[in-house]
Structures are given as structure tokens and as C-alpha cells.
Image (tube, rainbow, N blue to C red):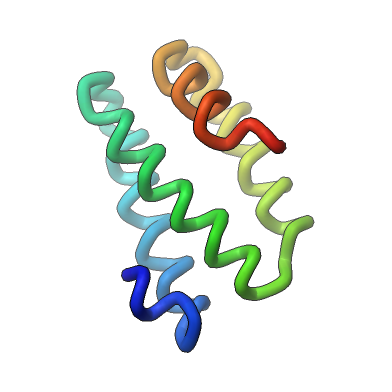
Length: 83
């Protein structure tokens, strides 16, 4: 995935989003750290596409959708703190 980021950031974005969302949607707290790792890749893809506003919007929507998942919110805040 990291190798594709410089040349195919749109592909990396869609794949990383799909993987992160599938983990978060299942709601298994022991796997949330993997979702956050994928979200880091999502953020990097948005940055590579020069779309910081879209990243902020997506991040905000995730916080609304999954806000009751305290462990996930804590991991996201720690790893993606500049949002």
C-alpha cells in the first residue's frame, strides 16, 4: 500500500478506507488498532491528493458514526491528533 501511495493515491485511499471501515463497523475493540493504522494511510492518501478538507470531513464523520466506541476514539485521538 505504501508503495502505491506516490503514484496511485486514489487507489490507496479507497483500499485503506474500505479496510479501516470494515474493522470499525464490526465493533471488535481488540482490532481497533488495526483500523487506526489503516486510517493513518487514509490520511496520507488525502495529503498526497492535496485534499486536507476532505480528510477533515471524513475524520469528523467517523467521530460522529463511531463516537460511542471509546477505545476507538482514544486510539484515533492519539494517532491522528492534528485534526
